[in-house]
Image 1 (cartoon, rainbow, N blue to C red):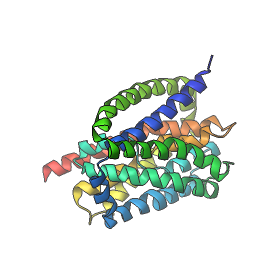
Image 2: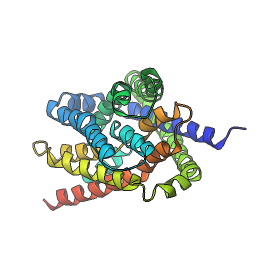
Image 3: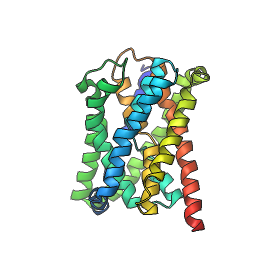
Image 4: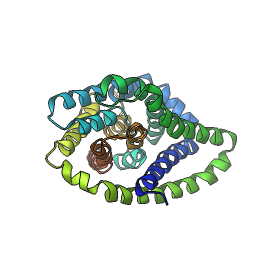
Amino acid sequence: MPSIETVFNLTLVVFIVGNLLGLGLDLVLSDARKTLTDLRFVGHSLVWGFVLCPALAFLMVAVIPMPAPYGIGLMLLGLAPCAPFVPMAARVSGGDLGYVAGLMVLSSVCVVFYMPLMVPVLVHGFSADTWTIAKPLVFFVAIPLVVGVIVRLLSPRGADHARPVVKAITSIDTGLMLLLIFWLYGRDFISSVGSYAIGSQVLFYALVTAAAYGFARRLPEEQRTVLAIGIATRNIGAALAPLLSVAGTDRRAIAMCVLAIPLTGAVAFAAAAIFGRAARAV
């Protein structure tokens, strides 16, 4: 009989694969093309997602006296922008959903190539070679996304039929995964109180949300909010994948990434509500 940890790992795989497959099945290539040819938006996304966010996480780990495993978790989160729930938050903010799709594709592709190169350089105390880090990202992020895109290209009708099924399975799996998270890591969450783990994450998300939004004034408002929300949220599956691929990983590093599920969601939806109210007031 499989252990609870094994079942949790399986639900995490289904969560990652389901969200990326669903993104590919949903992707309107004209929207992605419009986003990826908007060099100003792409430039902001790459600089914030893969330069400034990792730099801020690195600085916070160096300055805040948190235990090393929590620092490892924060660094991995810093390298993985754009959560699967960004479209929901973007709707609240009134963001351009076409740019949401493009940002999610851009972030997913960059994470697959960027994280294996940068983790050995930036994440001190986490011993894993490049392929060990890249392997789960390739199989659970890149391949499902590509499969979904190919199905959409070859058979739009088939993609439309498959999308609700994938979404339903992923939603059920997400509920089960959350239950297992609290079952397995509830005590770790409690022990993280007073360790700067929660405070450092909230500070990280708040800073990058405000800064990404504030420095993107030349973007249209509906793109600016998408950028800020995408940068504020973290791809928890991508951050967890390297940790779960290495035997003997400290539970506190995993708990730090798992804590991001409620924390990044709370900050993102709070920011989306503020952006939405401001847009309606204009």
